[in-house]
Length: 408
Length: 129
Image (cartoon, rainbow over all chains, first blue to last red):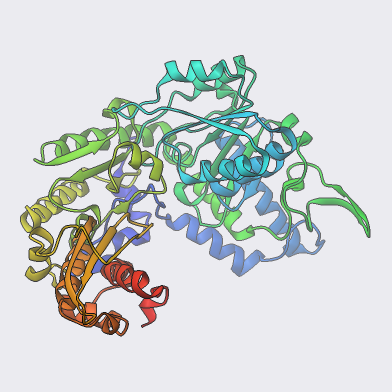
Protein backbone atom coordinates (compact mmCIF):
# COMPACT_ATOMS: atom_id res chain seq x y z
CA UNK A 1 0.00 0.00 0.00
CA UNK A 2 1.40 3.40 -0.95
CA UNK A 3 1.29 6.13 1.62
CA UNK A 4 -1.32 8.61 0.39
CA UNK A 5 -1.12 11.65 2.66
CA UNK A 6 -3.93 13.48 0.81
CA UNK A 7 -6.28 10.59 1.40
CA UNK A 8 -5.23 10.38 5.06
CA UNK A 9 -5.84 14.11 5.51
CA UNK A 10 -9.34 13.77 4.13
CA UNK A 11 -10.13 11.43 7.05
CA UNK A 12 -9.46 14.22 9.62
CA UNK A 13 -12.33 16.76 9.78
CA UNK A 14 -10.35 19.37 11.72
CA UNK A 15 -7.66 19.51 9.03
CA UNK A 16 -10.29 20.89 6.63
CA UNK A 17 -10.91 24.01 8.75
CA UNK A 18 -9.54 27.50 8.53
CA UNK A 19 -8.31 29.20 11.70
CA UNK A 20 -9.49 32.53 10.29
CA UNK A 21 -11.22 33.28 6.98
CA UNK A 22 -8.78 32.39 4.20
CA UNK A 23 -6.15 30.98 6.59
CA UNK A 24 -6.13 27.16 6.60
CA UNK A 25 -4.99 25.28 9.71
CA UNK A 26 -1.43 23.97 9.57
CA UNK A 27 -1.32 21.71 12.59
CA UNK A 28 2.25 21.09 13.74
CA UNK A 29 1.51 20.29 17.39
CA UNK A 30 0.81 16.55 17.31
CA UNK A 31 3.39 15.89 20.02
CA UNK A 32 1.05 17.75 22.40
CA UNK A 33 -2.04 15.99 21.08
CA UNK A 34 -2.92 14.36 17.78
CA UNK A 35 -5.98 15.17 15.68
CA UNK A 36 -8.74 12.57 15.40
CA UNK A 37 -9.95 10.78 12.27
CA UNK A 38 -13.64 10.50 11.40
CA UNK A 39 -13.63 6.80 12.33
CA UNK A 40 -12.71 7.60 15.96
CA UNK A 41 -15.35 10.32 16.21
CA UNK A 42 -17.94 7.98 14.66
CA UNK A 43 -17.10 5.10 16.99
CA UNK A 44 -17.56 7.29 20.05
CA UNK A 45 -20.76 8.87 18.76
CA UNK A 46 -22.18 5.46 17.84
CA UNK A 47 -21.38 4.20 21.33
CA UNK A 48 -23.38 7.01 22.93
CA UNK A 49 -26.19 6.83 20.36
CA UNK A 50 -26.65 3.04 20.41
CA UNK A 51 -24.85 1.18 23.17
CA UNK A 52 -24.32 3.48 26.14
CA UNK A 53 -24.48 1.52 29.40
CA UNK A 54 -22.21 0.82 32.34
CA UNK A 55 -19.95 -2.16 31.92
CA UNK A 56 -19.35 -5.51 33.64
CA UNK A 57 -22.34 -5.70 36.00
CA UNK A 58 -25.43 -5.33 33.84
CA UNK A 59 -27.07 -8.26 32.06
CA UNK A 60 -29.20 -6.24 29.70
CA UNK A 61 -28.38 -5.98 26.00
CA UNK A 62 -26.79 -2.54 26.14
CA UNK A 63 -24.62 -3.44 29.12
CA UNK A 64 -23.38 -6.50 27.28
CA UNK A 65 -22.67 -4.48 24.13
CA UNK A 66 -20.86 -1.80 26.12
CA UNK A 67 -18.77 -4.41 27.94
CA UNK A 68 -17.89 -6.16 24.68
CA UNK A 69 -16.85 -2.88 23.02
CA UNK A 70 -14.77 -1.87 26.04
CA UNK A 71 -12.99 -5.23 26.16
CA UNK A 72 -12.58 -5.51 22.36
CA UNK A 73 -10.68 -2.23 22.48
CA UNK A 74 -8.40 -3.65 25.19
CA UNK A 75 -7.67 -6.68 23.01
CA UNK A 76 -6.88 -4.44 20.01
CA UNK A 77 -4.48 -2.37 22.11
CA UNK A 78 -2.82 -5.55 23.42
CA UNK A 79 -2.24 -6.77 19.84
CA UNK A 80 -1.02 -3.32 18.80
CA UNK A 81 1.90 -3.43 21.28
CA UNK A 82 2.31 -7.23 21.02
CA UNK A 83 1.31 -7.90 24.63
CA UNK A 84 0.84 -11.59 25.43
CA UNK A 85 -2.60 -11.01 26.93
CA UNK A 86 -5.24 -8.24 27.16
CA UNK A 87 -5.23 -8.62 30.95
CA UNK A 88 -1.83 -6.91 30.91
CA UNK A 89 -3.46 -3.75 29.50
CA UNK A 90 -4.58 -1.54 32.41
CA UNK A 91 -6.69 1.43 31.37
CA UNK A 92 -5.61 4.66 33.07
CA UNK A 93 -6.42 8.31 32.43
CA UNK A 94 -3.19 8.96 30.54
CA UNK A 95 0.56 8.27 30.52
CA UNK A 96 0.99 10.35 33.67
CA UNK A 97 -1.49 8.25 35.63
CA UNK A 98 0.10 5.05 34.32
CA UNK A 99 3.51 6.14 35.64
CA UNK A 100 1.93 7.21 38.93
CA UNK A 101 0.28 3.79 39.19
CA UNK A 102 3.73 2.17 39.13
CA UNK A 103 5.06 4.74 41.60
CA UNK A 104 2.14 4.35 44.02
CA UNK A 105 1.63 0.60 43.78
CA UNK A 106 4.82 -1.20 42.76
CA UNK A 107 7.31 1.31 44.15
CA UNK A 108 5.63 1.90 47.53
CA UNK A 109 5.38 -1.85 48.07
CA UNK A 110 8.95 -2.49 46.98
CA UNK A 111 11.35 0.42 47.48
CA UNK A 112 13.06 1.23 50.76
CA UNK A 113 15.16 4.13 51.97
CA UNK A 114 18.32 4.41 49.91
CA UNK A 115 17.02 2.35 46.96
CA UNK A 116 18.08 3.80 43.62
CA UNK A 117 15.82 4.76 40.71
CA UNK A 118 17.61 5.79 37.51
CA UNK A 119 15.91 8.39 35.28
CA UNK A 120 17.31 10.55 32.47
CA UNK A 121 17.85 14.28 32.04
CA UNK A 122 15.39 14.35 29.13
CA UNK A 123 12.33 13.17 31.06
CA UNK A 124 8.92 14.79 30.86
CA UNK A 125 7.72 16.10 34.24
CA UNK A 126 5.36 13.09 34.38
CA UNK A 127 8.35 10.78 34.79
CA UNK A 128 10.12 13.06 37.28
CA UNK A 129 7.60 14.34 39.81
CA UNK A 130 6.17 10.93 40.89
CA UNK A 131 9.73 9.95 41.78
CA UNK A 132 10.42 13.29 43.53
CA UNK A 133 7.35 12.58 45.68
CA UNK A 134 8.64 9.12 46.51
CA UNK A 135 12.09 10.53 47.24
CA UNK A 136 10.59 12.87 49.85
CA UNK A 137 8.27 10.21 51.29
CA UNK A 138 10.45 7.13 51.21
CA UNK A 139 14.03 8.43 50.97
CA UNK A 140 14.75 6.71 47.65
CA UNK A 141 17.73 7.99 45.64
CA UNK A 142 17.48 9.37 42.12
CA UNK A 143 20.25 9.40 39.52
CA UNK A 144 20.01 10.68 35.97
CA UNK A 145 21.54 9.42 32.74
CA UNK A 146 23.09 12.62 31.29
CA UNK A 147 22.12 14.04 27.90
CA UNK A 148 24.97 14.99 25.54
CA UNK A 149 25.03 18.34 23.71
CA UNK A 150 23.75 16.49 20.61
CA UNK A 151 20.75 15.32 22.64
CA UNK A 152 21.75 11.66 23.10
CA UNK A 153 21.88 9.67 26.33
CA UNK A 154 25.38 9.03 27.71
CA UNK A 155 25.34 5.23 27.86
CA UNK A 156 28.84 5.03 29.36
CA UNK A 157 27.61 6.98 32.36
CA UNK A 158 24.51 4.74 32.41
CA UNK A 159 26.76 1.66 32.74
CA UNK A 160 28.56 3.33 35.66
CA UNK A 161 25.23 4.13 37.37
CA UNK A 162 24.13 0.51 36.95
CA UNK A 163 27.03 -0.55 39.20
CA UNK A 164 25.09 1.05 42.09
CA UNK A 165 22.44 -1.71 41.86
CA UNK A 166 19.35 0.32 40.92
CA UNK A 167 15.88 -1.13 41.52
CA UNK A 168 14.24 0.62 38.57
CA UNK A 169 15.28 2.36 35.36
CA UNK A 170 12.45 4.62 34.13
CA UNK A 171 13.01 6.46 30.86
CA UNK A 172 11.45 8.06 27.85
CA UNK A 173 11.39 6.03 24.63
CA UNK A 174 11.33 9.24 22.59
CA UNK A 175 11.97 12.76 23.89
CA UNK A 176 9.07 15.16 23.39
CA UNK A 177 11.55 18.04 22.93
CA UNK A 178 14.71 16.67 21.33
CA UNK A 179 12.88 13.97 19.40
CA UNK A 180 15.69 11.57 20.37
CA UNK A 181 14.67 7.92 20.02
CA UNK A 182 16.51 6.20 22.85
CA UNK A 183 17.98 2.70 22.39
CA UNK A 184 15.34 1.10 24.58
CA UNK A 185 16.33 -2.49 23.90
CA UNK A 186 19.93 -1.92 25.07
CA UNK A 187 18.89 0.17 28.06
CA UNK A 188 16.41 -2.51 29.17
CA UNK A 189 18.85 -5.40 28.64
CA UNK A 190 21.56 -3.64 30.69
CA UNK A 191 19.06 -2.80 33.43
CA UNK A 192 17.97 -6.41 33.69
CA UNK A 193 21.59 -7.55 33.85
CA UNK A 194 22.03 -5.20 36.80
CA UNK A 195 18.91 -6.63 38.48
CA UNK A 196 16.66 -3.61 37.88
CA UNK A 197 13.14 -3.43 36.47
CA UNK A 198 12.31 -1.03 33.64
CA UNK A 199 9.51 1.45 33.00
CA UNK A 200 9.28 2.88 29.50
CA UNK A 201 7.46 6.19 28.88
CA UNK A 202 5.95 5.44 25.47
CA UNK A 203 3.86 8.61 25.18
CA UNK A 204 5.81 9.66 22.06
CA UNK A 205 6.92 6.27 20.73
CA UNK A 206 3.78 4.11 20.66
CA UNK A 207 1.94 6.67 18.45
CA UNK A 208 4.78 6.97 15.94
CA UNK A 209 6.50 3.62 15.38
CA UNK A 210 5.97 -0.08 16.06
CA UNK A 211 6.60 -0.96 19.72
CA UNK A 212 6.78 -4.65 20.68
CA UNK A 213 6.74 -5.09 24.46
CA UNK A 214 7.81 -8.72 24.26
CA UNK A 215 10.75 -8.07 21.93
CA UNK A 216 11.81 -5.18 24.17
CA UNK A 217 11.28 -7.35 27.27
CA UNK A 218 10.13 -4.18 29.04
CA UNK A 219 8.52 -4.55 32.47
CA UNK A 220 6.15 -1.55 32.30
CA UNK A 221 5.07 0.64 29.38
CA UNK A 222 2.93 3.79 29.72
CA UNK A 223 1.17 5.64 26.87
CA UNK A 224 -1.85 7.85 26.09
CA UNK A 225 -4.65 7.50 23.53
CA UNK A 226 -4.87 11.18 22.69
CA UNK A 227 -1.39 11.32 21.17
CA UNK A 228 -2.26 8.41 18.82
CA UNK A 229 -5.47 9.67 17.18
CA UNK A 230 -7.67 8.64 20.12
CA UNK A 231 -9.61 10.71 22.67
CA UNK A 232 -8.28 12.44 25.77
CA UNK A 233 -8.98 10.91 29.18
CA UNK A 234 -7.67 7.40 28.54
CA UNK A 235 -4.22 5.83 28.55
CA UNK A 236 -2.62 2.50 29.28
CA UNK A 237 -0.21 0.86 31.66
CA UNK A 238 1.15 -2.37 30.22
CA UNK A 239 2.97 -4.59 32.71
CA UNK A 240 4.42 -8.06 32.90
CA UNK A 241 1.68 -10.30 34.32
CA UNK A 242 3.64 -11.59 37.31
CA UNK A 243 4.53 -8.05 38.36
CA UNK A 244 0.97 -6.75 38.02
CA UNK A 245 -0.35 -9.74 39.94
CA UNK A 246 2.02 -9.16 42.84
CA UNK A 247 1.30 -5.42 43.04
CA UNK A 248 -1.20 -4.05 45.58
CA UNK A 249 -4.24 -2.16 44.18
CA UNK A 250 -3.81 1.52 43.32
CA UNK A 251 -7.24 3.18 43.69
CA UNK A 252 -9.99 1.48 45.67
CA UNK A 253 -13.66 1.33 44.70
CA UNK A 254 -16.12 -0.48 42.49
CA UNK A 255 -15.06 -2.93 39.79
CA UNK A 256 -11.59 -3.44 41.29
CA UNK A 257 -12.93 -5.86 43.93
CA UNK A 258 -13.87 -9.51 44.06
CA UNK A 259 -15.64 -9.24 47.45
CA UNK A 260 -16.27 -6.37 49.84
CA UNK A 261 -17.23 -6.70 53.50
CA UNK A 262 -17.69 -3.97 56.06
CA UNK A 263 -14.12 -4.28 57.27
CA UNK A 264 -12.28 -5.92 54.37
CA UNK A 265 -12.12 -6.56 50.63
CA UNK A 266 -10.53 -8.98 48.19
CA UNK A 267 -9.18 -7.44 45.00
CA UNK A 268 -10.35 -8.46 41.55
CA UNK A 269 -8.17 -10.24 38.99
CA UNK A 270 -6.14 -8.43 36.33
CA UNK A 271 -6.71 -6.03 34.72
CA UNK A 272 -9.74 -4.97 36.81
CA UNK A 273 -7.73 -4.85 40.04
CA UNK A 274 -6.37 -1.50 38.87
CA UNK A 275 -9.56 -0.08 37.31
CA UNK A 276 -11.61 1.35 40.18
CA UNK A 277 -14.90 3.05 39.43
CA UNK A 278 -16.71 3.56 36.13
CA UNK A 279 -13.95 3.98 33.55
CA UNK A 280 -13.80 6.06 30.37
CA UNK A 281 -15.93 3.64 28.32
CA UNK A 282 -16.64 5.70 25.20
CA UNK A 283 -13.00 6.77 25.23
CA UNK A 284 -11.89 3.13 25.27
CA UNK A 285 -14.09 2.53 22.23
CA UNK A 286 -12.51 5.53 20.51
CA UNK A 287 -9.06 4.29 21.49
CA UNK A 288 -9.83 0.96 19.82
CA UNK A 289 -10.90 2.76 16.63
CA UNK A 290 -7.68 4.81 16.70
CA UNK A 291 -5.60 1.64 16.94
CA UNK A 292 -7.59 0.20 14.00
CA UNK A 293 -6.83 3.31 11.94
CA UNK A 294 -3.10 3.26 12.74
CA UNK A 295 -2.89 -0.49 12.06
CA UNK A 296 -4.63 -0.11 8.69
CA UNK A 297 -2.15 2.57 7.58
CA UNK A 298 0.75 0.60 9.09
CA UNK A 299 3.16 1.80 11.75
CA UNK A 300 6.22 1.21 9.55
CA UNK A 301 4.69 3.35 6.79
CA UNK A 302 3.87 6.07 9.33
CA UNK A 303 7.42 6.01 10.73
CA UNK A 304 8.90 6.21 7.22
CA UNK A 305 6.66 9.18 6.31
CA UNK A 306 7.59 11.02 9.51
CA UNK A 307 11.28 10.30 8.93
CA UNK A 308 11.08 11.92 5.49
CA UNK A 309 9.31 14.94 6.96
CA UNK A 310 11.88 15.25 9.76
CA UNK A 311 14.79 15.16 7.29
CA UNK A 312 13.08 17.81 5.17
CA UNK A 313 12.20 19.98 8.18
CA UNK A 314 15.73 19.92 9.62
CA UNK A 315 17.19 20.78 6.22
CA UNK A 316 14.83 23.72 5.75
CA UNK A 317 15.12 25.00 9.34
CA UNK A 318 18.89 24.79 9.53
CA UNK A 319 19.26 27.03 6.48
CA UNK A 320 17.59 29.90 8.41
CA UNK A 321 20.26 32.26 9.82
CA UNK A 322 20.10 32.60 13.61
CA UNK A 323 17.99 29.47 14.11
CA UNK A 324 19.20 26.54 16.25
CA UNK A 325 17.41 23.19 16.30
CA UNK A 326 17.90 21.02 19.40
CA UNK A 327 18.41 17.29 19.32
CA UNK A 328 20.25 14.78 17.16
CA UNK A 329 20.27 14.38 13.39
CA UNK A 330 17.22 12.98 11.61
CA UNK A 331 18.59 9.42 11.74
CA UNK A 332 18.31 9.37 15.54
CA UNK A 333 15.08 11.26 16.08
CA UNK A 334 11.34 11.20 15.50
CA UNK A 335 9.13 13.93 14.05
CA UNK A 336 9.94 16.77 16.44
CA UNK A 337 11.86 20.00 15.78
CA UNK A 338 12.34 22.23 18.82
CA UNK A 339 14.27 25.39 18.04
CA UNK A 340 15.25 28.85 19.19
CA UNK A 341 15.62 31.93 17.05
CA UNK A 342 18.26 34.45 18.13
CA UNK A 343 16.08 37.53 17.53
CA UNK A 344 12.75 36.51 19.09
CA UNK A 345 11.34 34.73 22.11
CA UNK A 346 9.62 31.35 21.44
CA UNK A 347 6.23 32.78 22.48
CA UNK A 348 6.50 35.58 19.99
CA UNK A 349 7.57 33.11 17.30
CA UNK A 350 4.54 30.92 18.03
CA UNK A 351 2.19 33.90 18.10
CA UNK A 352 3.35 35.21 14.73
CA UNK A 353 3.24 31.69 13.23
CA UNK A 354 -0.37 31.45 14.41
CA UNK A 355 -1.20 34.49 12.30
CA UNK A 356 -0.36 32.29 9.29
CA UNK A 357 -2.43 29.42 10.66
CA UNK A 358 0.65 27.47 11.78
CA UNK A 359 0.00 25.81 15.15
CA UNK A 360 3.20 25.13 17.10
CA UNK A 361 3.96 25.02 20.81
CA UNK A 362 6.21 27.38 22.77
CA UNK A 363 7.51 26.86 26.28
CA UNK A 364 9.48 24.20 28.09
CA UNK A 365 7.08 21.41 27.02
CA UNK A 366 6.97 19.91 30.53
CA UNK A 367 10.70 19.26 30.35
CA UNK A 368 12.09 22.16 32.37
CA UNK A 369 15.24 20.33 33.58
CA UNK A 370 16.20 19.60 29.96
CA UNK A 371 15.83 23.29 29.06
CA UNK A 372 17.93 24.23 32.10
CA UNK A 373 20.57 21.79 30.89
CA UNK A 374 20.71 23.57 27.53
CA UNK A 375 20.51 26.93 29.33
CA UNK A 376 17.41 28.17 27.50
CA UNK A 377 14.12 29.19 29.10
CA UNK A 378 11.94 27.88 26.30
CA UNK A 379 11.84 26.59 22.74
CA UNK A 380 9.37 26.71 19.87
CA UNK A 381 8.41 23.19 18.84
CA UNK A 382 6.98 21.93 15.56
CA UNK A 383 5.98 18.28 15.41
CA UNK A 384 4.72 15.97 12.69
CA UNK A 385 2.41 13.02 12.29
CA UNK A 386 1.02 10.81 9.55
CA UNK A 387 -1.14 13.65 8.18
CA UNK A 388 1.68 16.25 8.02
CA UNK A 389 3.14 17.38 4.69
CA UNK A 390 6.27 19.04 3.31
CA UNK A 391 4.06 21.95 2.16
CA UNK A 392 3.13 22.55 5.80
CA UNK A 393 6.83 22.65 6.70
CA UNK A 394 7.28 25.24 3.93
CA UNK A 395 4.54 27.37 5.53
CA UNK A 396 6.35 27.01 8.88
CA UNK A 397 9.58 28.26 7.32
CA UNK A 398 7.74 31.16 5.61
CA UNK A 399 6.32 32.09 9.01
CA UNK A 400 9.74 32.06 10.66
CA UNK A 401 11.04 34.47 7.99
CA UNK A 402 8.09 36.72 8.83
CA UNK A 403 9.17 36.64 12.49
CA UNK A 404 12.68 37.65 11.43
CA UNK A 405 11.24 40.58 9.48
CA UNK A 406 9.52 41.83 12.64
CA UNK A 407 12.27 41.18 15.13
CA UNK A 408 15.45 40.90 13.06
CA UNK B 1 -0.41 42.51 11.10
CA UNK B 2 -1.28 42.42 13.83
CA UNK B 3 -2.09 44.72 16.51
CA UNK B 4 -0.28 42.40 18.87
CA UNK B 5 3.10 43.47 17.55
CA UNK B 6 2.54 47.19 17.22
CA UNK B 7 5.68 49.18 16.61
CA UNK B 8 5.68 50.50 20.17
CA UNK B 9 5.96 46.98 21.55
CA UNK B 10 8.72 45.86 19.19
CA UNK B 11 10.57 49.13 19.90
CA UNK B 12 10.39 48.81 23.69
CA UNK B 13 11.37 45.13 23.41
CA UNK B 14 14.38 45.71 21.20
CA UNK B 15 15.54 48.99 22.78
CA UNK B 16 14.24 49.22 26.32
CA UNK B 17 14.89 52.53 28.09
CA UNK B 18 14.81 51.25 31.65
CA UNK B 19 16.54 47.90 31.49
CA UNK B 20 19.09 47.34 34.22
CA UNK B 21 19.57 46.84 37.92
CA UNK B 22 19.77 49.72 40.42
CA UNK B 23 22.38 49.25 43.10
CA UNK B 24 21.88 50.48 45.76
CA UNK B 25 18.08 50.42 45.74
CA UNK B 26 15.23 50.80 48.22
CA UNK B 27 13.11 47.98 46.83
CA UNK B 28 13.91 44.90 44.72
CA UNK B 29 11.37 42.30 43.63
CA UNK B 30 11.34 39.46 41.13
CA UNK B 31 9.05 36.76 39.88
CA UNK B 32 8.63 34.31 37.02
CA UNK B 33 5.82 32.98 34.91
CA UNK B 34 6.31 29.24 35.46
CA UNK B 35 4.50 28.30 32.27
CA UNK B 36 6.73 30.14 29.85
CA UNK B 37 9.82 31.04 31.85
CA UNK B 38 9.40 34.80 31.55
CA UNK B 39 11.34 36.44 34.36
CA UNK B 40 11.19 40.04 35.62
CA UNK B 41 13.11 41.84 38.35
CA UNK B 42 12.29 45.44 39.27
CA UNK B 43 14.46 47.71 41.44
CA UNK B 44 13.32 51.08 42.80
CA UNK B 45 14.83 54.13 44.50
CA UNK B 46 12.37 56.25 46.44
CA UNK B 47 12.94 59.90 47.39
CA UNK B 48 12.26 61.58 50.75
CA UNK B 49 8.70 62.42 49.66
CA UNK B 50 7.94 58.76 48.96
CA UNK B 51 8.02 59.16 45.19
CA UNK B 52 9.70 56.79 42.73
CA UNK B 53 12.95 58.57 41.93
CA UNK B 54 14.48 55.89 39.76
CA UNK B 55 13.36 52.49 38.55
CA UNK B 56 14.72 49.71 36.37
CA UNK B 57 13.71 46.25 35.25
CA UNK B 58 15.77 43.25 34.29
CA UNK B 59 14.81 39.89 32.97
CA UNK B 60 14.08 37.78 29.96
CA UNK B 61 11.00 36.72 28.12
CA UNK B 62 8.74 37.45 25.21
CA UNK B 63 8.23 40.84 23.60
CA UNK B 64 4.93 41.34 25.40
CA UNK B 65 6.39 40.75 28.88
CA UNK B 66 9.54 42.79 28.33
CA UNK B 67 7.86 45.71 26.56
CA UNK B 68 5.20 45.82 29.30
CA UNK B 69 7.91 46.02 31.94
CA UNK B 70 9.68 48.89 30.18
CA UNK B 71 6.43 50.81 29.71
CA UNK B 72 5.34 50.14 33.30
CA UNK B 73 8.63 51.35 34.76
CA UNK B 74 8.42 54.50 32.64
CA UNK B 75 4.85 55.11 33.83
CA UNK B 76 5.66 55.02 37.56
CA UNK B 77 8.61 57.43 37.58
CA UNK B 78 7.85 60.38 39.83
CA UNK B 79 4.68 58.76 41.16
CA UNK B 80 4.05 58.25 44.89
CA UNK B 81 4.78 54.67 45.84
CA UNK B 82 1.34 54.57 47.46
CA UNK B 83 -0.28 55.14 44.05
CA UNK B 84 1.24 51.99 42.61
CA UNK B 85 -1.20 50.06 44.75
CA UNK B 86 -4.04 51.34 42.59
CA UNK B 87 -2.59 50.28 39.23
CA UNK B 88 -4.74 47.69 37.47
CA UNK B 89 -4.67 45.39 34.50
CA UNK B 90 -6.23 48.19 32.47
CA UNK B 91 -3.19 50.40 33.13
CA UNK B 92 -0.97 47.85 31.37
CA UNK B 93 -3.43 47.33 28.51
CA UNK B 94 -3.63 51.11 28.04
CA UNK B 95 0.16 51.33 27.91
CA UNK B 96 0.35 48.54 25.33
CA UNK B 97 -2.70 49.73 23.43
CA UNK B 98 -3.82 46.19 22.56
CA UNK B 99 -6.30 43.51 23.56
CA UNK B 100 -4.82 40.24 24.80
CA UNK B 101 -6.10 36.69 25.15
CA UNK B 102 -5.79 34.89 28.48
CA UNK B 103 -2.41 33.26 27.73
CA UNK B 104 -0.62 36.42 26.64
CA UNK B 105 -2.31 38.48 29.37
CA UNK B 106 -0.15 36.58 31.88
CA UNK B 107 2.95 37.75 29.98
CA UNK B 108 1.74 41.35 29.94
CA UNK B 109 0.87 41.44 33.63
CA UNK B 110 4.03 39.82 34.99
CA UNK B 111 5.82 43.13 35.60
CA UNK B 112 2.81 44.62 37.42
CA UNK B 113 2.53 41.44 39.48
CA UNK B 114 6.18 41.76 40.45
CA UNK B 115 5.80 45.42 41.35
CA UNK B 116 2.61 45.12 43.41
CA UNK B 117 3.56 41.77 44.88
CA UNK B 118 6.88 43.14 46.03
CA UNK B 119 5.50 46.37 47.45
CA UNK B 120 2.29 45.12 48.99
CA UNK B 121 2.18 41.34 48.82
CA UNK B 122 -0.59 41.66 46.25
CA UNK B 123 -0.77 40.24 42.79
CA UNK B 124 -2.67 37.01 43.02
CA UNK B 125 -5.90 38.54 41.79
CA UNK B 126 -4.41 40.85 39.19
CA UNK B 127 -6.21 39.35 36.24
CA UNK B 128 -9.53 40.11 37.86
CA UNK B 129 -8.47 43.62 38.77
